[in-house]
Image 1 (cartoon, rainbow, N blue to C red):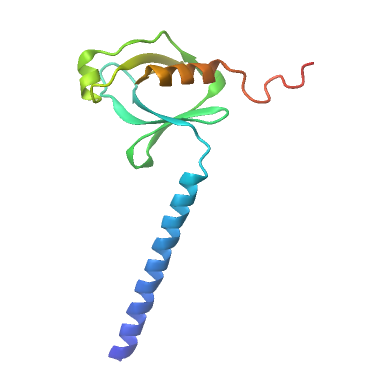
Image 2: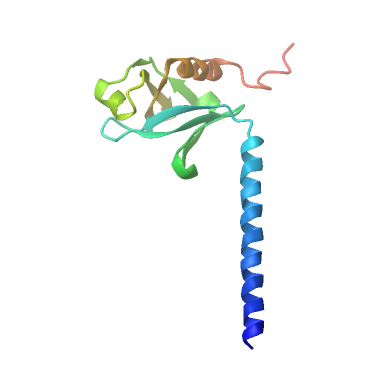
Length: 142
């Protein structure tokens, strides 16, 4: 009786180890296969809210902010994003976000408004992406 219980426990532990290794491998493969250009950024929905750090990720037609643990805000469709005029980030906010040279960008998405804080070079990349013609857009026009 005790011998069979030990065999069952060993089988369960072995199965859990195999499952864990499979999930780990799947996670690594997903990271390597990701074609999503990303950049560090922070997000807040209004002035009263604290900044939430994350990684800004854009694909051919969507933008999303992925936070710690995979939590995300968005996705926002490229054609509906309206980037406002970028300005200097409040010094206290910049200190809270690590003291980096960041700029603050107001964004309008339909009726929603929010702000992004990101480095100037990342802002330039984001603005270029938003203003570029999406793939396939009017592709049939001669």
